[in-house]
Amino acid sequence: MVIEIDKEGTLNGLADAIARTVKVERVTSLVILVCADNGFTPDDMDPLLQSINVPLMGGVFPNLLVGRERLTRGCVVWGVRRPLSVGTIRDISHPDIDLELAVEQALTPATGRALQVILVDGLASGIGALMNTFHEVAGIGSDTIGGGAGSLDFVQRPCLLTNEGMLQDAAVIATLPGHAGVGVAHGWRYIQGPYRITESDQNTIISLDWRPAFEVYREVVEAHSGQTFTDDNFFDLAKAYPFGLARMDAERVVRDPLFVRDDGALVCVGTVPEGDHVDILHGDTPSLIEAAASARQIAEQRLAEPLATRLFMDCISRVLFLGDDFDTELASVAIDDVPLIGACTIGEVANHGGDYPEFYNKTSVVAALPLYTEF
Image (cartoon, rainbow, N blue to C red):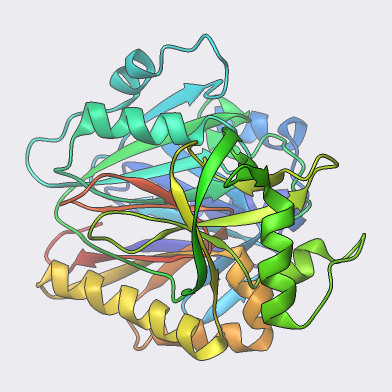
């Protein structure tokens, strides 16, 4: 595995890391991860990205993960030695987009086992429809890992990296031939529910059991926490109380409430389908750390082969919740000297090959790559 790291977060540092990587023998493509606090803009990045003559995919994330270190500034360049087929989908939230055609054009069918890597604008409203369409087109045969790009100010801007430049409201899908193991776990526990989503609009819950969503949510959270919502503390309190969408014979899919609208609707990261049922969840430091370790163990059990590399996509809200204890969570995944790279994301994408891909929040996703395959 070829990994170059720049911890300064400068454009020159990134350009140098890319130059070093593409010079390595048999590097055929690039995965580029950069920190949002680098402040890169399309004016900065597009000339560099457009000059790269091998396929690339990448994103801008709140933090990056390298071994047991979390970077708040910097870049990671992964030089991939297996052929990486990359496709881009623009305007995923546009009402007139033919998502089925777009996914078919972006997705390279794999002959045999493959790891699908999906990076998406984490603030795009069309993520749910994209995941449903990806399932319909790709089926359940591929292992999948990925995440939502963006920054912690929750302002939507260009955040995906392609050979065309930086993109917004888009998704990048890459097919990496070879077997992988994928594990998913979150550690959030039931406290109240279920509630029926009686009205929603893509990523916004308007009502629960025919009551304004925030009215229901506020009652439960304030009673459980002993704290009171004010005009300026919504996210600080809500980060410990996500929603959990019920799934048959599977762990709940977590949805992170970002803010409350004036009409009492709750805007979340990810689609919240009308008619679905949700619980209100809560977690603590031990349960979250245990879940991250579980995701690693599941990934390695599903790989069932000698391990070469770990890819780790972990929600940035877990960093905000855990604080200094996030180092312990990261250490529960980076347990040895096996290389680990990844990002703290705005939503996580995962599928272990026997189910359909989901867009998660507040969740740990680990992919284990095998030793015999030169990635």
